[in-house]
Length: 293
Image (cartoon, rainbow, N blue to C red; front, side, top):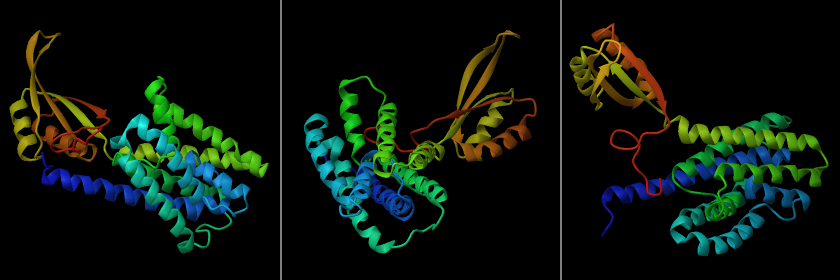
């Protein structure tokens, strides 16, 4: 069966997002983190350690690429081509960007401010990785190692990644003999982790409303016609009054919450409303359902 036009567009949109994320990541790494000699987590951190230890004679893109090729060769048999397709693209594209970016960014973007440079670099790297992960992509490296381990052992992916990153950052002491470098590296790891979570979940975050009102029909119609949202009306029983009640269930974007409250209040000031945060909503009107979600 041939893929639909929608799926074809979605496929190229994924690779566009991966490319954009890798560009942001490479700017953060080359323009902010590398000039202050901070080590990040992942294979990029290992590659930075090799470059720092060799005093620049082995640029980071070379160990990054060749170690990834070895890991991909092993993972191809264990995880399969379908899992690795976007990872291979990510590895090749990031290798090219790490080769080109030093020729474009020849001076530190933030000079004489190692901590500030590390924080900004961590934010950019985290945002870039978030874009890549949102498109079901990967930059390879320790992602592959943890994915292989996760297939055979019951170890949480996030916990495995954190352990790998922490070990790599602590190894920077071997090169620099400076605990401050470790502290800066751990700060970068924390900022990156928070930014990745913000990009993946923060902008996707939605809210769920449970609305109890005698004017449920008017409110439901207003939701349909004014907000252009669907809703569901459930039958319930108020256990204190022992009377039947109608409950409106509504899923909406977080940015729409204030408008929803104002609309409900204008219809029924006595309505009882419960709002809760929803991590993600997939389907019509929200995020499209991706393969491998």
